[in-house]
Length: 273
Image (cartoon, rainbow, N blue to C red):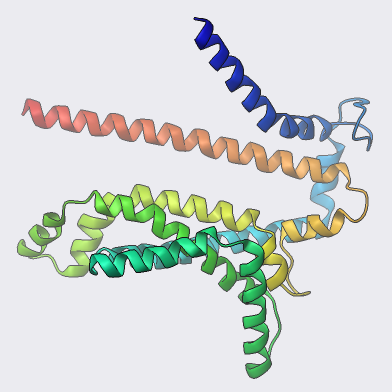
């Protein structure tokens, strides 16, 4: 019992250490004054002012569009890459995976600066400036390695004979993929989309070096605002983002539980039949 209580205490301290700053931020999002140390009273005026601030709303919209597009494109490319990686020889697989790990382990600052230099070199030749397209390409580039790492275990779980069976039964390769392979790797695709969205929406370093004056993401805007006094509107914005993420996690867990129940029911039905 003592050992268990110590573990619970340790777990509580870790959770408190991780979430106490977020809790403080949420509390002061409802503070009636701009003080960051004294809670003077309850108000929701900062949420109202947040939606009136066109600069923050535009940056939020830019980040959402960028995160959605980059996660979708990176998931498609990363899934196709993972499918092809498993078809090559073991030696080539190890080489490709080592290169993939380099992209994951590599510092975002290094990636951001290197991509910026590449974009500047190309844009000097073809014309143009840093903006939405360059940031989109940069985000797709650093999300793809994570998608590959997520998709490979899911693809390895598939019985390779299933595809051959579908082809023998008359399916075309494309129809066999969409009817047989895709449903089985859909959980991995969903995980990749969510992870890609989170990485893109949260990214600062790569966005900072690859964006221009015509396009600004929310993390870059918040960084520029830290040079001045941060208003409670930022606390309100972070509170809304945290609540939305929390709701998404709850919905995902509910869907996973229902999916597991449906699988157990189908398995029990097959056994009984």
